[in-house]
Length: 242
Ligand code: 6PG
Image 1 (cartoon, rainbow, N blue to C red):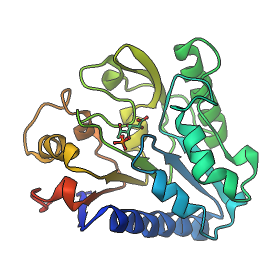
Image 2 (cartoon, protein in one colour; image 1 turned 90 degrees about the vertical axis):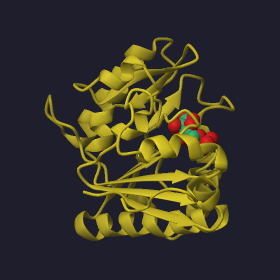
Image 3 (cartoon, helix red, strand yellow; image 1 turned 180 degrees about the vertical axis):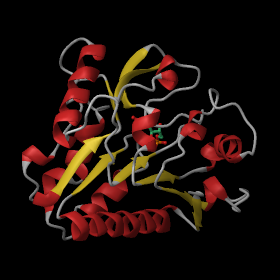
Image 4 (cartoon, rainbow, N blue to C red; image 1 turned 30 degrees about the horizontal axis):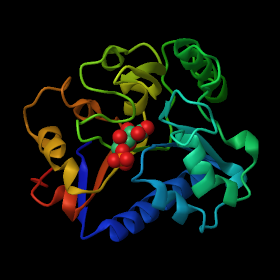
């Protein structure tokens, strides 16, 4: 399915558009199946979106929240992605704790914790070996280097195609991450990108030809919908012909 690229005039309108899109997709899943699943991205860009989600009215007991990646730090560490989302959103709405599925980072062994989360996902989604579950929404950001989730350039994580979860690495620091095939199984992937610092990476990601290992976000080609929501600072010069 061709990507949908939307360039919003500023960060505030980017967040508003992200909110309406995410709400639309979650509501559609709720209408269709009575529940919905979303994987959150980390970093700084999505925080105002999570703050906006905290103001919305959804049957929160029917919403299941996962993470697409996590820094391998304790749950109460300032860099922990789940901690940020709990403070901005999840602690502020009546969502049952059982609906919140943070990646484990307390086992002192990233590979073992990656498999723990994989097992948890397989149990939750009732997937068979070799199957990849379909999440309704997967939120992603992009780094200045073109990484997404914790799929960093020229790392082994980019090659993993028979797992749901693997160990990524940034500057020698381990991270847990959805694999490319798990992200690509999503019903709807939404990149939310702000700031001129992302423009060089976006140019490479959107180029007809470029090295996927150097710009891993190019590997995200979901079987479902792919949205790139950009503010003008990030997306002004892009060829938006999809
Ligand atoms: C993380 C994210 C990562 C993030 C990008 C963009 O754990 O940091 O999942 O993939 O989305 O690095 O980060 P910013 O939104 O802070 O620019």
